[in-house]
Amino acid sequence: MSGGYGGKPSDDGCGCSASGGSFLTKLARLEFPMFAGGDPGSWFPCVEQFFEYQEVSEDQKVSLVAFHLEGEAN
Image (cartoon, rainbow, N blue to C red):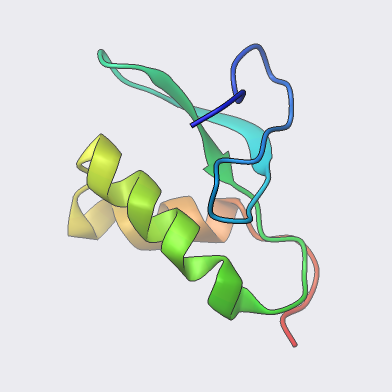
């Protein structure tokens, strides 16, 4: 994974850009992938990768996703 630190946009290898919305953990500061419209199918794998790495609980997933939505899905 490259970039994503210091609030700079990054490409994490799955085709998504970081939002600047950090999710702070004891392991690493990662940027949650922002959805800004277009095809959500290419965004879902980025989000799942984030959830898996950060060990996000099921009850936190919906609120995290909702917070990081912008634009409309096609």
